[in-house]
Length: 309
Image (cartoon, rainbow, N blue to C red; front, side):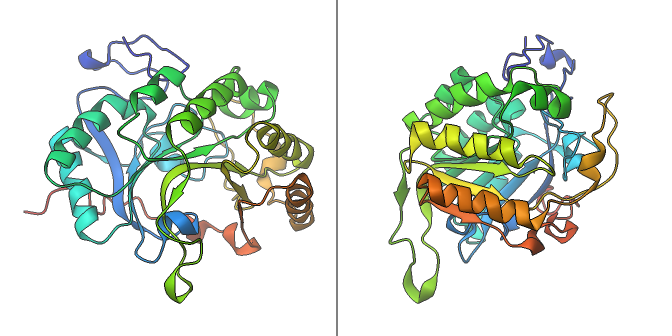
């Protein structure tokens, strides 16, 4: 009975039953597996992050820019052996790491695939790229498997979490999961933060916490940064994001906020960055206005997913 995420749907996925996320245990659905250059510099580096985009999601935010995969509309099914092969192929392509995007509902499959891949020579760091809505017990299971946690901290309060992601307990679980991530993944870099020829240093272990500024949510965003900094200081990295991309009204039975049809006000983002500086945040990544563009959304066209004949 599935209890991999805080929704704890208790469905029997081995029999093909699907809970909130939409995934079953019969196979793993993946939409893209390729080198990705649009993550934080210490993740993408110069050669790219070996990114595996899993289909389905335990949050399904109404404003999701990857709705085609979070709703399971895109992707092909593979087994754990093929997932292990994909990881090794990305390593052969020169990836700095293996970046598992929206992995929560496939944790069991991922652990099995990592055991196979590591036995066949997988050596690069593993990145767990999550929306932050995680069970601490599941994060604990990833000790020894995951080196870097690239996690969202989406909301300052559960009212917004329920409105936008139908997650009435998001904050409590995001807090508990983050605490466990910091415990098992201390910060570590390959070299100095600016490497040779001005190349970015590559993170080998640690935690990066992302917060996406939503339209009209400056106060809430400040509260998130204050909450995180008061507990973790500069022992984590912060990614303060402006790339919110207005798409179209979502469905899923969740009331859509008309404010989300507009991009983030650049002045509000600048004020958020200034606030982070005043707090004392030193380890931070920020974005320019061009990040709020659909061109930053990769094509979910099964690149790298299926085995070449």
